[in-house]
Length: 254
Ligand code: MLT
Image (cartoon, rainbow, N blue to C red):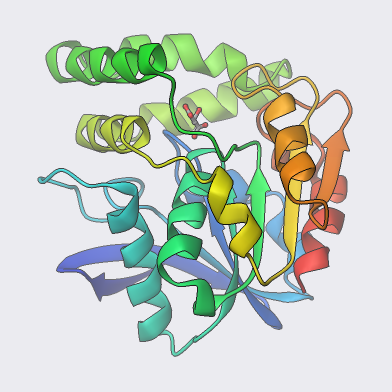
């Protein structure tokens, strides 16, 4: 695992393989290990860069509020440090929100965009309120209740569920709080879609109980050129539940 100075923090990342630069962004509340199983299927095609978003994994803890643009700016600075001008940017769930913020701020640096189990909509008011309540609860009582409510919704596969739970449990409360607030405040990206000048891949499990597959179908409806891959039987983590199909879909960004 490498660490690079970006935006006055240490951003941790792994880099594997050779080919088209591909950044894989993990979702909430996880770290880059989410992608461990799928990387061997991608490293012959891509130069795979796997950051831990600020506050998560081995990246520096955060002590100030961060928005989606801050998470995106960290990725831009990391690519600067690696001398990579343009990369395919793929995000899982919250990582997809970061990928969209990246595409909004640095469109010239995107050679393709991938949304895995994600969406382009902003939070509805009640969802936003729920995020702030969760953030307050994490501040007062720790991460337990968020983990308890989220882990069972990730997948029906018990082994993978326990893997996801372990990963959630090792993330610090401050990372949860910052990410919950950033998700609550994220912009709606629907109108951004029509400005995209690069390939877009949308991957979604039809059994995702955290973000329903309709969100992926809406992206396809708004952007007919998008390559939508629906994965039958997969929940919220298709890169683990159906890694071959997910890898094959991501290769459209090579
Ligand atoms: C995630 O998996 O990153 C989150 O469930 C996304 C969200 O809550 O909107």
